[in-house]
Image (cartoon, rainbow, N blue to C red; front, side):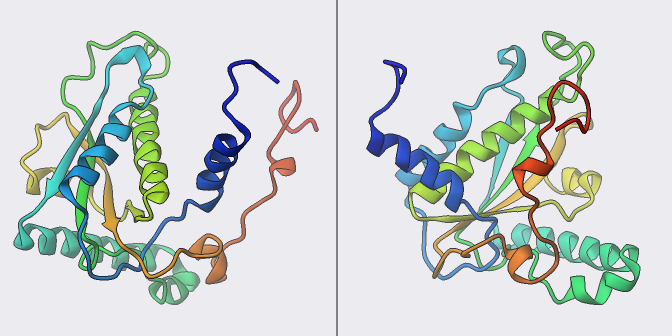
Length: 215
């Protein structure tokens, strides 16, 4: 055991919050206290970022009309996705895919404008800015779960339309609509697994050694 390891109780808490994190869609009335929201966003802001570029930007949505407009964008994409799914479209339409109208707080996570000059760690992998934002979102998700709040990541939207709605620069990019707030209960497993849409695969199927698909 490394001398830098946390206590057994602290380690157990970390693994617990990772294991119990859920992509939530069902929210109940309630609020997120300002100090708690600030704490959660600070956790996101502590995420790792390539070249320390910190490409994340968060837009807090407080205007009801804007929340409604975002919900309409998501509904448009939900219908388009159902059509693209063909024979699974009807099953998809029965899924609850967002909690935009119900959650206490609505955030849009985006990539900043002017990312091209940042080449440290991105010269051959420019998508590492997106990876950095994803790490910040995961920090926010885990911190929210530890605080007893649910969070859901919604990706059903046209990024250009959402960017225009929020007045973003042309080279900024919205990546996630984040629904955050109190929930009645957390799903016992990923919701898509509970609904029969898909089942998670075991790690053993996804872990290779030395060569692709060599186990």
